[in-house]
Structures are given as structure tokens and as C-alpha cells.
Image 1 (cartoon, rainbow over the protein chains, first blue to last red):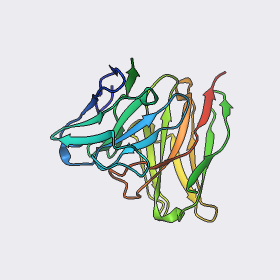
Image 2: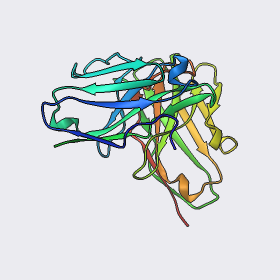
Image 3: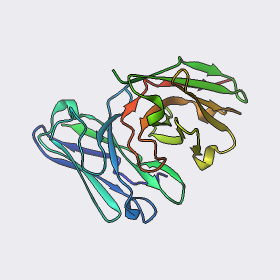
Length: 111
Length: 121
């Protein structure tokens, strides 16, 4: 049972827009700790996709965007491409646990 | 370029210990922290703990307290993670990742390639 809750899977057709939610609580996202997002392609290490709620590292396409409100955060992907098929994880800090926490991960399938 | 290179795969028996290394290059090691994250086969990411490369203070996940120790050697820009009393459910890929060094809500911007640790009798 992950501290941050994500849907196990989402899907969309090429060109469409999908969103992935990340729901936390008052001791993590709701406590104003930053949320970060990672993309993990099969058999590879995770890659930082969004940091500080809504910032993209250099090289990440602007098709990827993040937002945060209250105790939840979201990752949006527009103009879906086949290469976006991967697992996506949110991450934040939890003051009750005194450590970082991850969501359970969401598998994105491009139909 | 900025990178983290981890040690190779390990096979251990239950009850043994494992020590994984993570060598940093391309940046000033002591300016950042190192977090360790593991991923069991077919499962999600699990944060294990963090160490400040500058001061050496640590934070560990509650479920691993007492079994894990994280250290750094600033002379070689290398971080280490030792896990003791290994069990079968410790079988996982272990990653090191660079973070901002605050010990709080930093992102993990650079990741090692991962080290597979298999615990089996």
C-alpha cells in the first residue's frame, strides 16, 4: 500500500491527451512538499520527468506538464506518442515518515 | 558527463549482507545528496534512505531501520549502501540517485544503472 495513490493503468490513442493522478494526504502533498514525476521505460532506470510540481528538466518535451492542488498532483501528457508507453511514478516527502515516498506507479499504454 | 555508476550484480544467501557501491563523476560530489531506491521484480519504486554527501547525516525508511547503513567516501566520490540479514523479499534492483542534498522534498535528477541483488538459498 503506497502512501501516494496512483491509478494502476491509463491508456490513450496516439495524439490524445491523458492525465495521471497522484493522491496524497496532509503529511505529504498537502503539507506543501514538492511533487516530482519519473518515467521508467522497460528494463531501464527511472528518468526525472517533472520536478518541483511543474518544471521540466532540459530535454523533456513540453508535451509533459505537471500540476498540484491541495493533497493531489497530476501529470498530463498531450499529443501521445508510442514512445511514451512506460511506467510513471510520482514522488514527494512525508513528514510523518520522515522520508521520501513514491506512488505505486501507473502503466501508460498507447493504443 | 554527470553520471552514477553502480557495482555489479550480487547473489546472496538468506541472512547474509550485501554492500552496493555508487561512484559519482562529472559534478562536485559533496554538493548533493544520494538516495537509494529499490524495485522488486514487477513492483514499484521503494525509497530506502538518503545520505548527505557533505555532512554524512542519514535518513532511513522505517521498515529498514536497523538493517541498512549508508555511507560515503568523499575521497573517491563513492556512496555505499549495506543491507544486512537479507531475506528473499530483499531481491530487487537497487538504484542510487542524486538529489539536492536537503534531505526533504528534493527530486532525484541523476540515477545509477541499477544493481540486481538476488537473495536465494
